[in-house]
Image (cartoon, rainbow, N blue to C red):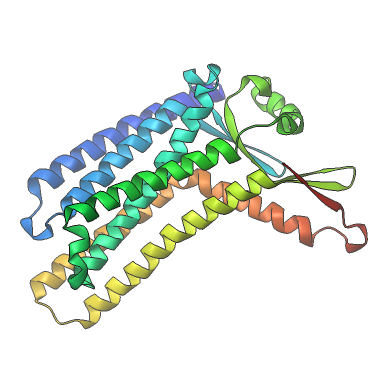
Length: 293
């Protein structure tokens, strides 16, 4: 089988499995959950819907990773890829869905944190105007991820020249005919380091947003663990809240392992290359650094 066939089969299998599992999860949460958890079941349902939307975006775009030296490419291998710019836009949608899912996951932790640790702030998840605020925030977070991919990671003529040979060798296709986004931090030409500041800005924004959601989950998660250990409450309530917290942590880890493949590789590759740029070059032959607009 060719690479395209493997991508097609894997994408279809993941989409079908994710849809079936999440639809079943929505049914269970909606019909079988106890009244004790209140509106939290709607947060869980929203997360399941977000998972389905993410899987659908992945199914439509069928992203494939290609790494060439100090650059990262996410290439659409979908049927839509041959119709520009729709292939590129489908990848931006895929990244937007990833961002929205991270926001919903962080919202899980915020909800549980308010229930367990800040009961006097419970109005933040009960009053309609605040519920609308959370919904808008989730859409904004995903929209921001998509815009970063759209405006900061779009292919350029410089990148075409940079990765043309590598892409042709692996995919046997002209790079100009492919739909992809790329993170291209710098290139070295005749001893001159040419830095692509737009990719740097985009990568910095993505890193910052990922760290923000991670910190929200880490801080609220730790606060909940401490509160459940120290605060006096009925055994039934403690058991319920502990079970919900364990389920949330398990759900978060499962989601992160399955879906963070693209962003983690993106960060790892470019962080290593950025550090290597400044720490592995001999000081006597430090290249001149210029910036590209």
